[in-house]
Length: 101
Image (cartoon, rainbow, N blue to C red; front, side, top):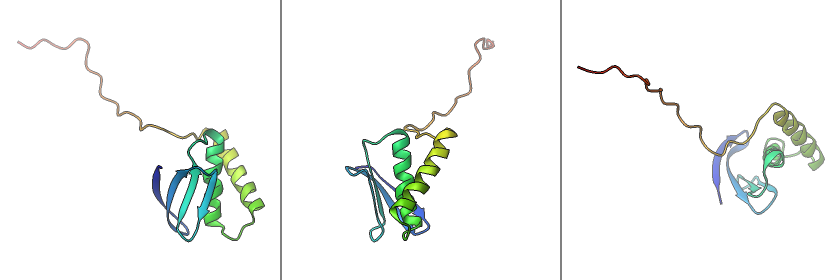
């Protein structure tokens, strides 16, 4: 199980990837998202569970609508999950180094 910690408006939450599609536990400050969900569905699920923490009194229908709208916009503008950290660029060495005498 992968775990990450994030500070949200409701406090510090541990984010977990588990066997559920998604679940938020306010009392324990956990957000679970299934590890086999990818792409736009994964983005939508993370947003959906985060909206539950920000708006704990919202109905499930409201949470679904809000999360779907946010995920749709973020997906359209190109937000994607980065699985690896980008490699640092190293300055290119000269192809014709000056000979030292």
